[in-house]
Image (cartoon, rainbow, N blue to C red; front, side, top):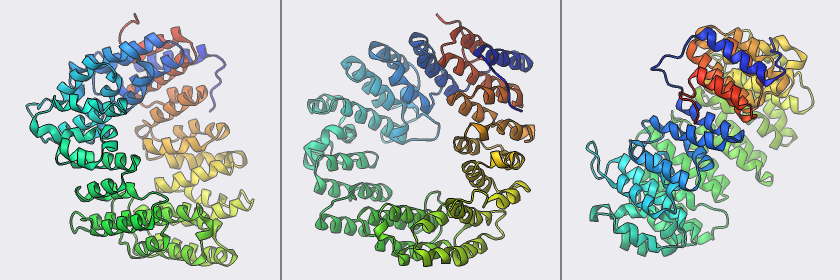
Length: 559
């Protein structure tokens, strides 16, 4: 049921009561690191800049989450930023990614530290010495080492654009075998060209190649970019060539680019790797305005099991390309896309695109093809998805979305009822619940909408809540507490994700309801932490700090 909260004190009191029921915070327990960063941001937004900086710096006691990279430049400025980054050099942070198991330059904490110290010569040099160190568990070419060095040089180069003298300064810090690392300073090397890059760096490593190709393009050095791209490894070469496919290329350059992609190594002969190559080739053709060549690849593309690649995702990409160029959306091209989607050979795991494809294709079609979509293609799509749990409802969802656009908001109500009456596939339930939010089902039939949202949340996956809630207006969100209450307690830890959304949109009633619905002490603490953030963001610092200390978000008294 909706919770009546008239003041911030009410929310604070609800949080205190929930925490009292959950019991004391164990001494060994630590709040999630992303929640701690969000708490610092909330304090900052509420005007407590000094306290925010202290709490953000305190996060250095553990792994840093992705959120830290965005929060740090906002909260930490000038000497304060340098102090925090310097403190981080005394621990493991320069050698870690933001999440264990990721080893790309974009994941390296060291890149964020470089942005904090940029402009301070001593701190820059200290950071470079730290990341260049070969650790006991590493060798010179270790992926993690390469990633952190690349991230630092890239960030510092962007901070010193127009100052190529830094290349000599940094080069002096490098052993001979490490000179290729300097290629990561793409923002400075791009204007100098490939010959100068080769002279300074020798072989450009794959980890730096795509960034340097983009820098050559930005400096109007297409030939250098193309030459460098063809030197890279298979996957990096494909991605680098894609960055060269920009609108307005001369026919000569476009021809050279296509020829280079045809010669590009695929990596190996496995089905999935081959499929990724062809999918990327189709993307290159779309970028070059050669939609018919992309359609040829689509018609021949074999299915695979790599997320984001394969016939179904590519079909949607082609339709969206046509949507941006409606004069090119001929019936023949649209039929070619629909025929691929309706093919029985495609695996059903990627079939969620069907609910998007049907209304988009219908909007692009002429009257004759619109009739075919309703009478021929939707039944074919439904047949393709039969015996796949409840995924055949995706075809009905797509058709219903078409009818809704004609003004009939009730078109999908029978489909909603079917989905709400059984344990529907979570992706299908999500698509339908999002459509139900658009068609204001909560106003017409609150009980049915509640059951549909319950079915969507039943599996307890956080990503489902993250995807669903932004599609609901305040009236539709009012059913979420009842829907969560109908989910078994052992599947209810997504209350934390719901509370996070409620905090970000300042929905105190929904947040308070999640305090009551939390299935265990840890979830209760994390939801209470979100209540503390709402209070802090609205300037209610005494109550915010009290709740934050009680839930373990803040361990020590503020200074």
